Length: 216
Image (cartoon, rainbow, N blue to C red; front, side):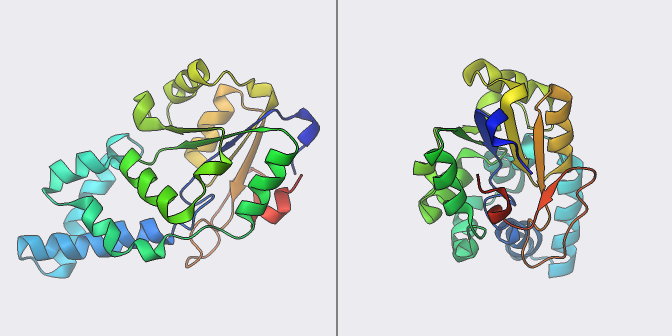
């Protein structure tokens, strides 16, 4: 699936790619709506409906991924609520073996995520994955989400990869489309970002069930 002889840099998404998206889906779709409804004295269904509308209005933007934005918007302690369900944070199968194998053949490994730095810190503390990366870049530090061309331009300014010799693995079709427009040569999708949900449509991108299929 990947021609490793033509790769120097490996760009990896975090949520849904390296980590099970079940944590994020449960948090944003069930746990936070419950806490929000409690804080407003609303029925659970009404709280969830209100939050879903707010999410939809911000989808694909940097604000949607920002803990600080939602803490201000909802007047809630988002990170405290994330800690309440942090036991759900889990690494997808064969990820650590894959990272070790890629390091062993001398490729540069960069975590490129839309996750806010507060969420990133929580997840790295829980998983111990941070030591596997040569660099960790959050879109919040660059001021543009991965869905935007500005993200790739700004990433290139601090991480001088050759798009023609780079692979990106990501679970978002919008992000893969953006990376394709930027010229990243090899793109791989993830069939089941959330292990509690059915496989998702991966468009015309080569897609993996798990990282054992990408082993160099």
